[in-house]
Length: 626
Ligand SMILES: O=C(O)c1ccc(O)c(O)c1
Ligand SMILES: [Mg+2]
Image 1 (tube, rainbow, N blue to C red):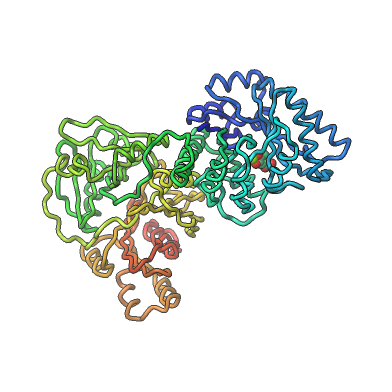
Image 2: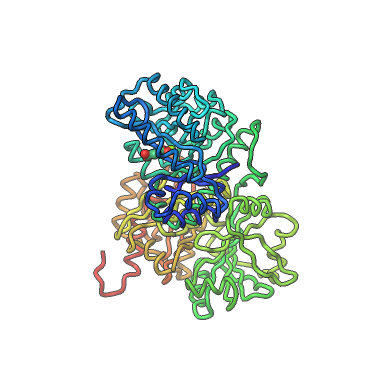
């Protein structure tokens, strides 16, 4: 598989872009003309610099407003093409993209356009150049790849071929079946982009909202299955016009791009096993079986406060780590570790961020297989020296540089609690928690796509629609992802004074902001929490009046919810009850939930009231309440 990305997809100067693209593992780069013109390097120097990075120029683009023009525009267009072909010879690339014309003088006419391309093919051949025709979704006369293909077919010239761009095809909802009948050797190039399903003007959508395959809602996999079926074996190139990526860190955006391409082609080969695949073999994504533990890092000074919080939530310290200053707390099937080491990775996390979640351990079907998949996706592995006798647990870096451990039921890793911890004392029933329902990870707004891609590619996680939550100080966006038994909500905000915005700023980056524990009896849990003096979040009277009216709840139920501060939501599948803690000083909080039936959400409708209540509860005395 030859991978490529357009320079327009990432931020920086041309040298910075090349550096990032090469570092991410791509084979080639599309030079977007503007990026070349804006640089002050000669075409030969650019060509040399590309080669020095081990890359090739897969495409030069775009050449606009060429076909279907009357004279004198037509001759001007040919003269312009000559100049660009000379430039391409110096750059050292042989393929140019002509996008369909939007010129006001263009007359169209399929045979006129075909003739234009046949003549252009002759000029191109003299320069050793091939020309690919792409239908822009908003082209004046050609806006559908089927028409572009008909023009190319009638041009009938070996130097003229078709360029497919998933955005233009999928954005217009054009049948993917129509791709399968195009001969693969007539497709000169394939560009890939996804996009969120937001109804808007095609051109504006394309120029601002494209994203990496797997980050949006378009069927890019279906598109590539059809392309692969044609026998096309050329480069697969990302062409992503995205406001956020243009302002992002070039290396991270390029890395996400590489990951998205590998994941895409992995999906294609698994869905089209009869077709040849140019991808090296690596394991399929596997759904997560559960969260084995969550680890906090803290200090001697802050540990008593964290311990009070954990005991209040019903956890009991049951064992010490055999060599490290780590305590295992337990309740029901839930394990929470508290790490107080004064050296090593966990401690350096504490030094930067204070008390925080430094690790999440996931139970997967096969940890080594998951690690192999991570390597193929260029996910950063994490390794530490382990004393003899203790387990070396495969791990990768997750959100905010935290550690994601990979455990399984195999003979080695299933020994984790026996090998690494002293024998566990019995834990009492606690407050009736049975597991981890979901984990809320808070991050900068522009990291959200990146981490949803991470979970999607690593664990085949499905994404729920993005929801907006109103914080009194700005909007927060929340994206839920789920793989098997793991549910994660990714939260971000561009507004700095939201709970989410402050958490990222004050915690020096992304991390877990809340953990939602499951219970089978929310009222018993809420009573037990209250009896233990746990800092439960007080919910205002107005909320209960509204929720009772909204869902027509019986008075008896509301009368139980109110004193225990239990929130309620429902969807077509079932009911949902929630109790929250107040925010801790570092912004972290717990949630306790009961799902009934097949309720599939996260109580997003309640989030604005929960946030307002949390802000009210932590506001210093003397400031006006809201
Ligand atoms: O938005 C554009 O003009 C544009 C240009 C070149 C392309 O390949 C494309 O897909 C879009
Ligand atoms: Mg394109």
